[in-house]
View 1 (cartoon, protein in one colour):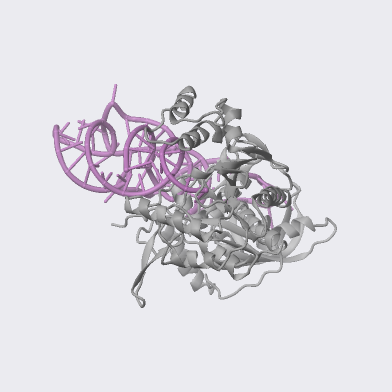
View 2 (view 1 turned 90 degrees about the horizontal axis):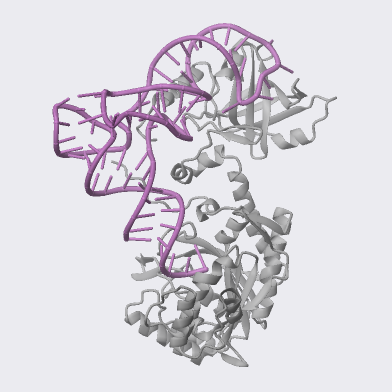
Length: 496
RNA sequence: GAGUCGCUAGCUCAGUCGGUAGAGCAACUGCCUUUUAAGCAGUGGGUCGGGAGUUCAAUUCUCCCGCGACUCACCA
């Protein structure tokens, strides 16, 4: 408990002492409830006063002399309670009115409807279950309009428990997140995918280009890294004979924090042997649209001012064509770096000196195309140079079988037909090692065991990764990843 | 990592062209037995994010620091 005890807290601690003197335990061992607020309201009939037993947090208080109204909130919602001195007796009524907003209480009573028409509980017995000694922000509401909303974002994230307790909608957002994650598991396990868990602590962090967190194992006396991706382990499982696997769990990247980045984030990766990237395209659009239908009840959603239609099929367009569509630049016709630089210039982009044709194309895509892909679009067939882990297209080896789905101007995943040639893979690792030695901290390390696995033979396969936090942002219409993570990373408060 | 903005009572916010601060809600004391952003009357509550400087005087001006939000850069 912190030292900064305000007058308000002192008063509540005094109340605890007084309650103890009256024989009331401010923190009783247990309480069992029978009913939820919303169920009571949904099942209410005007001609019967039902006995109910609810428990939750006291959210408002309206004492009126010898009677008092209050609202009690539980997980389901809130319900009005009505206490009368002539029912409770003078002492118990006094204890009831001494309850503070924020206290956890249990209430037994009968249902009725007030003059104003609100379904309520007439209190027969009210018990304190946990005293709240810190004043809770008081958020009021009338006709859907909020007053004194708990708005300090830093406090909301640091003290998420308070945010959940007082901010309407926050609980619902996290419940939706949980259901979508369950829904993904159901969707995939229903299609023959096996959920697996692969190491989060890895000696060689691979599968992505990112800086890892490092740590140390004392007994083995080795440095370990928190994984940046599960990819290489999941593909080892394909070698072993699991034909469809997925992992839905945390990745860790030692990078900056922004509205789209948290150092630990939740990633779905799935792999299917004997499929290719076209199968993954169908899966991506079917899974995401059906999740929307199931959990939002619709496939047309509002996101930050845009209306987005997730109904499949989504637009499918090649990397070259999508650049042409939005910028009129046709990379099919561009054969030299000079032409590419002129093209960049024509769309108002100054590019760095040492870029290749396709790196310039990628710059144009990121700067001039990406944010226009508001409606779901699958951008496919990337240049090989930009895609070190994908398989080349049979009829056009300069390109690879890879796609990225875009929604609301943002990349929400990455998928490709997997590279399973150990010779090619080894050459690519060697290239990465050279880059690493040249100072690129995001370049990958050589993973000889992974090469060894491929040498045993990995079936042709397709794989996909989807950033779950960002997908949830779309579903809860939030512009910040912090609204999708219960406890986003913040710098610890300095205590001095 | 860079830029911009913010930090005042438990919460939401005013305010001080430099003279140590106010409102609403919450709290406390009265009154009130169907209220609902309950109402009426009264009361208390703040090292104005932290430190230093300038000044007779700093919450206000200057500098440094801390934390956050947003934008940019990197990624998913």
